[in-house]
Image (cartoon, rainbow, N blue to C red):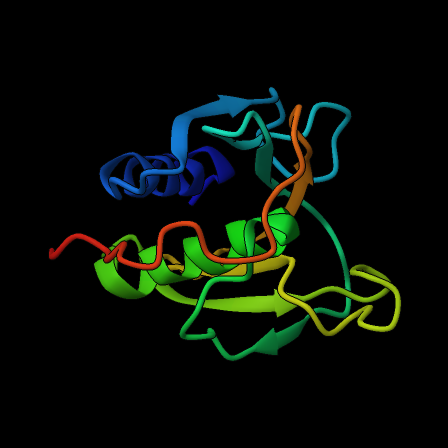
Length: 158
């Protein structure tokens, strides 16, 4: 399965999620495989103006993590995006994917937590191919809160 197809599935899940903080979900980049000069990915724009990106990457040494029951706060936008994507996959269980893992990546994360925070997803497709999506983020015009702004949000039933 190609990276573009993996991104198609995630884009649809994000759009269908109905999460009140998500203002837009768009694709970016032109590469068909990870590691090129124009990484392909998914851009999630939030009502606050900040953005998170899930993009095809090559990053050896990932560590699988359990999916937490609570989202990281918006102030940790990249980790929040990775965990939310894992929640969407766990709820939808798309047939195109055989498995997925929330992962930490070596040398990434806040000081003192490097290599131990969720900053990516390893997705194994039903055809046996696998993709690593790295999560990154960009801040908006205002600071993000350290508390959950949408405690009543629930994933839609499938």
